[in-house]
Image (tube, rainbow, N blue to C red):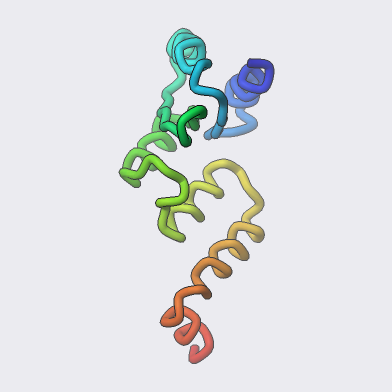
Length: 116
């Protein structure tokens, strides 16, 4: 819960607009209680059998994640993955590199990129 508490601190201080916190599912109720007490919007998805992903932060960021209509990060399109990374505050250039690397696996995209 220490890392979770620190994530709340970062959000409340305006350091981050969106946080992704992965933890054991046994922590779900405590996390919900704290987020609701703090009036912080959140979204929780299962990760395998033992863990959960807790997204929390600005309501508009949570709405974007909801709009993807996917629970597993592995199910995200390349574009959704890029958007999520940017919202989480990841380095923009590294996100661009990650996006291009993922897209280059698609033959048609690679051909379009090479031909201009």
